[in-house]
Length: 165
Image (cartoon, rainbow, N blue to C red; front, side, top):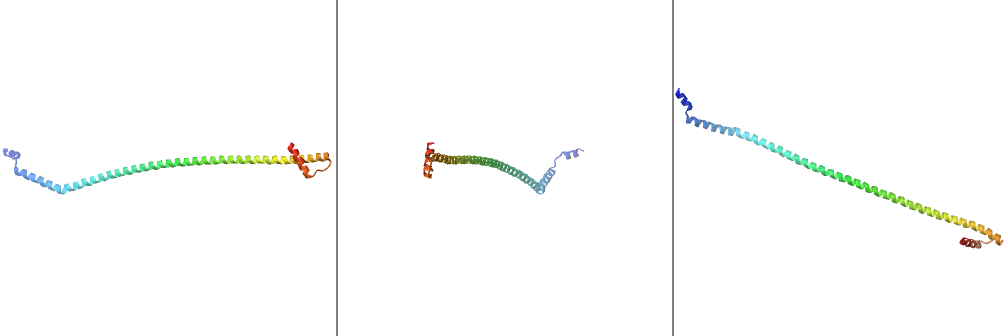
């Protein structure tokens, strides 16, 4: 019995060498058949992760460009709206000034026409007054002189009478 335990406890060098050789062969076999496929799968996964990260970065950059473009368009739209309002205001001011100027011109023309009408009426009244006065003066002169006055004498009398008035 003692030998059996010794055999269990004792070191067999050939046994150790064969075990190390088996381990070395197993590592070579695993390296040849398992290591390369595992490395390939890991590389593919790494490429996928990098691709996803690149797509995310590209998407973020595109979103940022779109946001900047949107802000620029929004600013342009606001500027265009301000320009439209400014143009409409200027046009309304110009139209208002034109209307006021037209009204002033019409008022001036109406005043001129009224003054001309007044002047015309004044002349008509003066002519009627002259005719009436001349008729009266002819009658007075005929009764005073007792004869009829010719037209030239008549005009001279009228003019002198009007001048004296």
